[in-house]
Image (cartoon, rainbow, N blue to C red; front, side, top):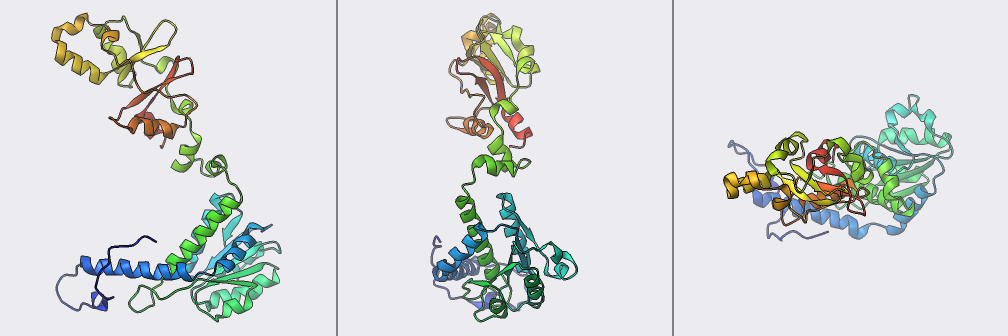
Length: 347
């Protein structure tokens, strides 16, 4: 992990035990010490993790022919749910099995081809110990993921992964804050290893996130969100500026797309160009054509480009723009994509 600036302060527990009657506040020095301590404990995990165990665990999940179930109690239960959801988002069959509900009927979902992963810091969680014999009777393969050596779960499961834990950040070494961080890092890293091993493509990943911003950024192309046909603010370069004010404002794009007779893009004329021309020319604007004042070298984009690429192009230096003309390989205008349209599409 990256390093924080070092502090000469020891891990001072007085930060937690201030009995002053004054209003509570957080000291920046003490806060830095906490982050440095948490970093130290996480580094201990990384430096002492048994990669051979982790490899066996990952390969076992990769070879699963059934569903990978995760279970845990309390904070470990929340971590288990999150890791399971991550696997599902990668197209891997997974689910969370509540140890309490499992003993009241939900264990019926387990089969001989399934894997049950039990997360527990101590490895002595009563609810999980009660679940083990029932899960074994269903024929599932059991894996415990624990941080205490010689715990009960590791002795009754088919395989155990040890997550090295120096101590909790909590001054009493009780509140599960470092241990849950370790569990999350471990589970999510294994998930990405599975993603790589399965050669999951961007399109396959996007297909699992169709409604969210992630999926939209990987699925939507410019042609999917652009304005086209009657929605386009078109004009010719010989048109007088003052004759095109309605076209400039009515299409909601903040610009005119200047084209020739074959619909090739000549340039763009924006409402900002109108203001600058009016300021510089005054009444002379009545004699000016759009072609005389338009930008003949605008940013453009291909209809097959990803919509997120259009947004990046709009925001790129030297200055951001609010729209991009969409042209084909022959420079024929077929649409316009606007920042407002991208935001409305959820991008």
